[in-house]
Length: 250
Image 1 (cartoon, rainbow, N blue to C red):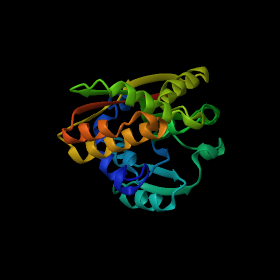
Image 2 (cartoon, rainbow, N blue to C red; image 1 turned 90 degrees about the vertical axis):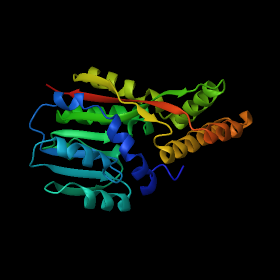
Image 3 (cartoon, helix red, strand yellow; image 1 turned 180 degrees about the vertical axis):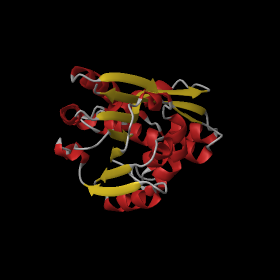
Image 4 (cartoon, one colour; image 1 turned 30 degrees about the vertical axis):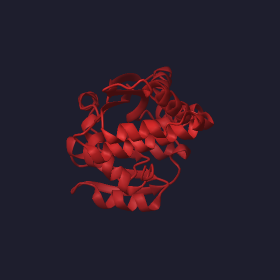
């Protein structure tokens, strides 16, 4: 893969992210939504997707620990949206950081966190009574058309890799939803799968290399290189499971 957080990879996946996110959840957001804190914002793709779908004025606080990505995100936000950048580790967020915020949001972040980190994030949102929209958490469900007998072994190895070092990986979306419910929020979940295939060959091929590469790192004894070669030679249609979680404190 080009690099999990590289600008090239984030740009390549942005259209698939935009197509996958649940529009239904936006209709459930309490209004007004004027101050938004975007966690792990990367190059700002979530802001570019969400900001045009919310009333103006808006003030976005873009939060990431990568200064270069923050600068790209701030530069590429839609016109008419006020922006501030906050360079930090998002797991260090405090209740005071959410003062005045109407919404905390993120994209493809929760599965990179541990249970303790999600618990802390939920606790901070609950203390501040700040609603949260967490999009595109992987579920571990990957389905190919046509199928291959080796699909399940690669999928299981990848999911085990995602759970390394106590990360929640494909369990993160459900874990966060349960934590928000325990904290008193009203939680709504929507599936938000990527749909890849020959219609987007560059993204599909790059995702496939990264997916199989992580699986091979987890299970180097399995010889997944042949699987990658076969799948790359004739790109399949792929559904990559994600889910969006909306938590509202009433």
